[in-house]
Amino acid sequence: MRLLIVEDEDVLRAQLVEHFAVNGTVVEEAADGRDALYLGSEFPCDLAIVDLGLPEISGIDVIRQWRQAGHEFPILILTARSNWQDKVEGLEAGADDYVTKPFHLEEVQARVTALMRRAAGHASSQVQYGPINIDTGARTVSREGEAVELTTYEYNTLAYLVHHAGKVISKTELTEHLYDQDYDRDSNVLEVFVGRLRKKLDPGGDLKPIATIRGAGYRFDLERT
Amino acid sequence: MRLLIVEDEDVLRAQLVEHFAVNGTVVEEAADGRDALYLGSEFPCDLAIVDLGLPEISGIDVIRQWRQAGHEFPILILTARSNWQDKVEGLEAGADDYVTKPFHLEEVQARVTALMRRAAGHASSQVQYGPINIDTGARTVSREGEAVELTTYEYNTLAYLVHHAGKVISKTELTEHLYDQDYDRDSNVLEVFVGRLRKKLDPGGDLKPIATIRGAGYRFDLERT
DNA sequence: ACCGAGGCTGAACGCTTCCTGAACAACTCA
DNA sequence: TGAGTTGTTCAGGAAGCGTTCAGCCTCGGT
Image 1 (cartoon, rainbow over the protein chains, first blue to last red):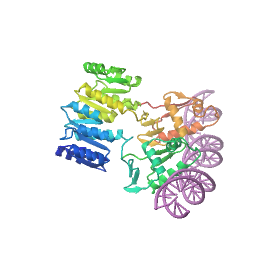
Image 2: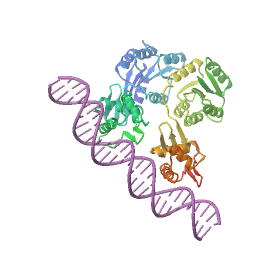
Image 3: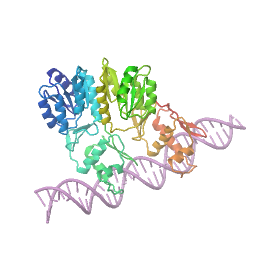
Image 4: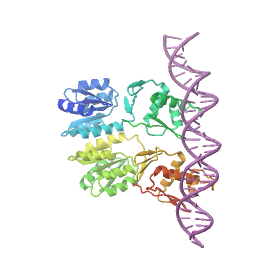
């Protein structure tokens, strides 16, 4: 996961960075609004934590500009307890959640995981399922860091399954998604694609990312990590 | 919009009701957990605001039971500022957001609109019977968290029994449900399916989820939890 | 206690679905 | 135009699933 932390107080920022920079989370930090704006555009992050009380450019302006630029990652704002108006303004500017200062790190952690879980649908960029990493922005897939080359249809098939991970997707649903309503029902293209996907994603054969539910369809079976 | 407000302090509840009961919003109110549980099931609401500090049944229990019963409306919790653990626990129980007391009405309003805006998504209707969990959306069954793989007919048989839990279902009724009116009366398919179901759902043999009523049929015997 | 009917279960069979390797067709790019 | 890549079809084989059957067990009545 990629996390962007915007906070002008050095001590607090260091605390946050230290807390979140574990097991595969890449953390980028900004101390003022200018850096934040730049990183929000250049660093394809999955979630941002923004302190509203920033020097120069206010946090609310940062959020507003990010949203106007089309960035959709979830935003968690930090705000002093005294001025609740800020929270409302921040939420209206496009933030998704807030925590009031002073806070407990566990509280922030809880909100972050909640936001990530909620964003599982239209999250930009990267998602990790066990050893398999999918970058929905770049349409690339890697396994244990090694890039896996997928063709267009292979990727689309995988993406649709992953997007509905844990749910059984019928072949008809998959086909209708891959080919706009014009499909031949007695073709086995899907089976071929799924076969090729399995071979590419799981050459060893012990991961079993895609389960077939006989008579019902397929299901992507890895837990998000 | 239909809104359910659960709050034991009369003054505060009245304030909330008065604030939200405008332009087409139907507001239902509950003063304790018992009423809340009832209304949550009977009043098809779009969003609930729940105070965690309730007499008798705690707000967290209410939320947990709603979620287990398959209700998916967004839940906003109200909690005293002092104990932040409640918020975390509430969010883990299935709430979507929180506001700390004392609060400004505008703040609650902002969170409510935010929740409603993002309420377009997610669906999984789960039912829990003791250690057995049935997800009717995904057509999956799990036992103590472990997934139980069922074939189509096994699942259909179970689903029908569970749907009429506590009632005796005759073999003819079950067969007619599984096979559209075209069935062979001297076949023992059902017995085979029930046998396989028992083995899969209750390998130990001490749960006895499906009872045999000799000469009458079968009955699903677990209490909904 | 005995007997018969109803219920259970392990094994087997055949049908359907799914997988897979390979060939073929269509498309892309130089 | 020709080589390489990607999408599609096909056929044979493998596996899963519903179904049947035979033999055993269990319950309830006499």
